[in-house]
Amino acid sequence: MAEIRNYTINFGPQHPAAHGVLRLVLELDGEVIVRADPHIGLLHRGTEKLAETKTWLQTVPYLDRLDYVSMMCNEHAYVMAVEKLLGVEVPLRAQYIRVMMDEVTRILNHLLNIGTHALDIGAMTMVLYTFREREDLMDVYEAVSGARLHAAYYRPGGVYRDLPDRMPQYEVNKFKNAETVRRLNEARQGSLLDFLEDFTNRFPTYVDEYETLLTDNRIWKQRTVGVGVVSPERALQLGFTGPMLRGSGVEWDLRKKQPYEVYDRMEFDVPVGVNGDCYDRYLVRIEEMRQANRIVRQCIDWLRNDSAKGAGPVITDNHKVAPPPREKMKAGMEDLIHHFKLFTEGMHVPPGEAYAAIEHPKGEFGVYAISDGGNKPYRIKLRSPGFPHLAATDELAKGHMIADATAIIGTIDLVLGDTDR
Amino acid sequence: MSARLELLCQNLQNVLGDRIVGLKTALGEVTLEVAAAHYLEVARILRDHPDLRFEQLMDLTGVDYSAWGDGAWEGPRFAAVCHLTSISKNWRLRLRVFAPDDGFPVLPSVVNLWNGANWYEREAFDLYGIHFEGHPDLRRILTDYGFVGHPFRKDFPISGHVEMRYDPEQRRVVYQPVSIEPREVTPRIIREDSYGDAGRG
Image (cartoon, rainbow over all chains, first blue to last red):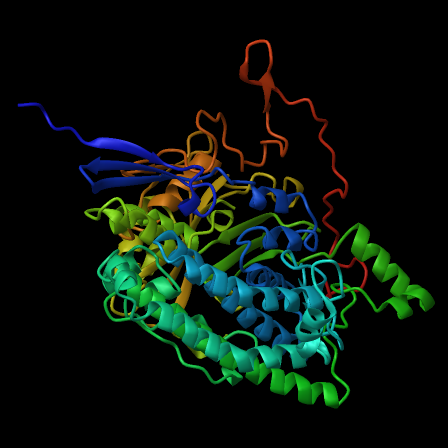
């Protein structure tokens, strides 16, 4: 009789279900995965090393390029670490804007995750629906920061600028006639907050639509229930955070447990799973989108009242950290000097070390910043949530069929930019 | 200092005693420093002791202190820094341990205590060349196959040592020494404390 040997296959680095450039070496016994060895680093850009050669402010745009589907959350952890070292206060309005944009980002991230996860395991329609909603939120990103993806909107001490009073409008062109443009612009007549409020009114219905498509879908359940089960003990051992940890039934959410910014003023619930499989993690993400929607609404209410009162500042008035307003810079000597020093030499951060963590859509995103008192960081370590999750692929995939590998990659919400840094 | 951090420091003092080399609270974070010889033992106590209970290793990273403050650093060059979290107690701790030998930095591995440390230690090995004794699979992780050197060390240039290009004659990709000039737009400056408006950074 012929000797039976395990078969090794190479999944990726260019594979439509690999969510980027992941090379997965799978050792198979028939169709069963015996060992999965992810080879990462194909998207390693050395962000942490680059940060050491840039001033504290110049590093912010690099953070967008880590997890390129939840841009502002990455910036958030970084600016929080810098603010901690500097000891600057962030104006309340900026804190609300940050929380609102963080939750918009969370919805963006989960929409992408659920859409592509479903696409990977055979439900084509989902991605079409979720990208429709992502488009609206991308417009929000563009309106506040000027960029759809790489916002660079959060700055040490606050946010770059206040929310815009009007939304950009569509214009008639050879692809869109006047009627289509009128319909598209209907929600865009007011300010950004009006547009976002209109979105939050519509969004719960959209989530219901996703749930009708997936939650009770027999094929979806066959592909996800009981796949990639993690017990709560193992999840803690492996360093899981975010939906991966909550899916296993551990109630741990930094927004509740160690609140930052104004999360302690927000009303929201933290969903947890029971079985710790792909299906439970999907349910957690769906519910997180609904909760994020709730938080966005609360922020809109507050920001609108604040705007009615004339709106407070959105960035600190400590001009060693944040530049003075343009008009003042043109008229005042001291402001001109501040502006010049800030954009040539950069800010000086007192020596010390700080670790700031936020509840990123994928889990805990932490920034460990060490300063030796210079105008550049001495060392920045980015604790990306995807890294320990991907490290656990072997344990998650072992004993499953090869087709489940895509389900597992989908459920760990893999973005290689974030894992490889 | 908040009461909870004080309690944590108190517990650490009581449990670890003279194994503590340094215990500092700054910016609302507790930093514990231990000797490499006690590292593994302390890590186990931190995880298992009922008054501490750090179930989760959030992060483990290497740090190269050799360029600190324009050459003002004295002491060992490489350190591993762990960030621990306790889910049940809801507190955090930073644990730093210096590798005794600068030429060949070796530290014990904590993979058996926190399985999540596996890739973090591989990363620290890859980028800083810190060897973790007892690690089951200490391979490079982020750099290219066949990469030479440890890129995050302070003496490794930002442009690297080699670059890659396609050679039409040999009809394959070849490595050659880097041809780009190193360029620094903003120099690194550390100002004295009284520079500008003192105390505001």
